[in-house]
Image 1 (cartoon, rainbow, N blue to C red):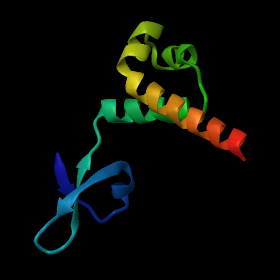
Image 2: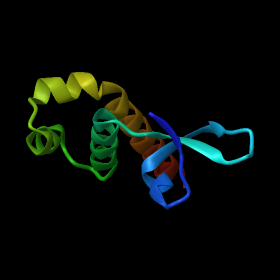
Image 3: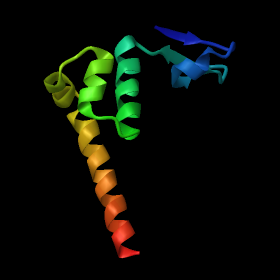
Image 4: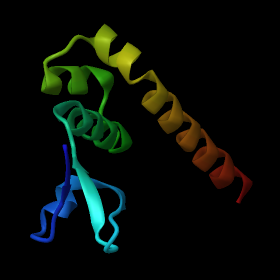
Length: 88
């Protein structure tokens, strides 16, 4: 669903483009987008896969497979911080 809004809902929506008058057109986020955001925020905060699986009602295997790219990104960021800390 694409809408043009001016009532503050844009904080919960994703900007898509500008319409002919210059107003930003937003797309309403779907449930899985909220779920991915929730999982990513918890991974970034240091939650374990087990904790996240419990929170979202899934198994360890499903969370690990579905969010493997988030987990890999997080691990790479941590490794980079660690290397930088040891260099300084």
